[in-house]
Amino acid sequence: MTEKRNIHALIEKEAPSLNNLLDPNDVKEFKAMTSELRDTWTKKQVFRTETEMRMSVLQDMKYPTKAAKYWQCVREQNVFLENLMSLSFECRRNEVKLKRLEQKLEKEEDPIKKELYQIDIDEKRYGLANMQLIARDRMREIKLWSALKKEFDDGSFDTKDVNTHQLESYHHIMKNKAETLTSGSSQPEVFNVLGQLKTIERVKKSGEMIYNKKEQISHDDLGSKPE
Image (cartoon, rainbow, N blue to C red; front, top):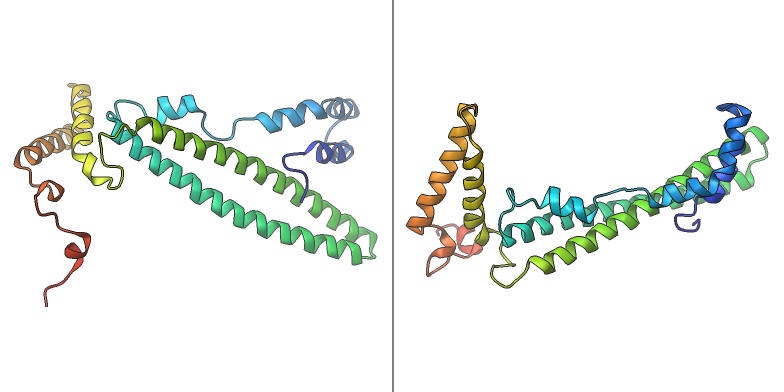
């Protein structure tokens, strides 16, 4: 495998081929910028920053409680975990394809076919470098979601069952939405927000949620059939 995230050599190697696309002066300037372009490629933003995670994803109107924020962190972290695992499989597959191309190049005698194999190899190496960059940034965000989970977990809510916080969190969310309704809001929007809000308030008052009962019904009980 090529050195992680090192595309300087790949950029330099590809620069002469840009003569087919650019005029000579642009090619010259491109060659002079290879170090800068590698730096740009390495530090470019791939996924969300902490600022975007806090202000956009975990914004207070949509996730008004620490429990709601914590469980959204769980969802986001899991998505990045699954994507990282899929990327790992894709990377392994491309590494094998690269080895196969290198074997074909070594055995090939036709100069035109050798040139085509080399192009495929260079493209595969660039693709692997991109995967390494993406994997690094996915891992960065996974670690940030972990830190945020620890921050929001103050011991005041259940971190094992997502359901137990939702009634209270949804109550806050629907009250926030109700406060934004205006005379210009559509009838379906008003119906949906007020309908959910009234239902939540009724359910909270009645205590009918299963997890609020003294004898909770287990998941096995919920799925069991009478004999």
